[in-house]
Each structure stands twice: as C-alpha cells, then as structure tokens.
Image (cartoon, rainbow, N blue to C red; front, side):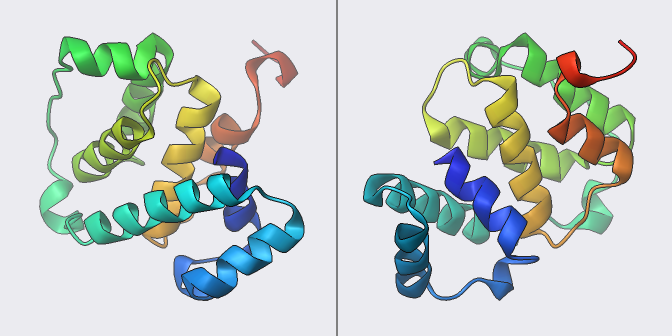
Length: 151
C-alpha cells in the first residue's frame, strides 16, 4: 500500500489532480501494482479525504500538549512519536494535523508501524491538505539516517 501512496505523491501534485477511483485503479494496475494493494490505498485515501475537512488551521494552530495512550505508543513506536514531536516543535505540523496523522497511522493496523511507513503517512497528510512541506521536513521524510552526511 505504501508504494502506491508514494507513487501518487510523486505523480499527482494534489489529490484533485488524481482521476476518479476507477480510472486511477486502472492506471495503478497498468503500472504494476497488485489489486489488493490498490484497494487498500484508495480506501485509506478516501478516509483521509473525509477527515481532512476536520483540520481547521486557524483554530488548530494554538499550541497543545499531547499525551500518548499506551496503545498509541505501541502503535506508533518511539521513533514515530519522536518524529511527530520534531515536526511539531519545528512548527510545521499543527495539533489538528498531528491528530490526523495518528488517526491514519491507526487505520493501517500494523503495530508498531515502521518509521519509514510513518513518514509516508505524514507526507500524504501534507499532500491531502495541499501543503508542501519545507525543505527541512522533506529531507527528514526522504533521507534515511544512514544516508546523511552528518549524524
């Protein structure tokens, strides 16, 4: 599923640029993605689209403190929680966007979710809201720690 999401991010600048689900599924199948993987990704994106309207930026820009439940800590893992904290402290992820990211991570059903997959979820939340992460965030999303020049 994550490969499909990354493909959509790389090939469609905004969700509105995507064709309807039937045509998109055909295109994804023609590129070589499996039917189940396509179904999962499109369902996940539909749910994301339904919830993105709940992100009211002006009211969600207020600072907030998030206490993670044990189930959320198990789901996200230490690295993903740390990454969320980094994004919030950098001022690029609002509390409402954070909650949307956590919700979409919960919908995956993998415990704990890998940091690499979690970063794809974060990227897709930005994408669905029509926001382009700044270069610092893009670097964190796409460059693995082993590939960085400075550790």
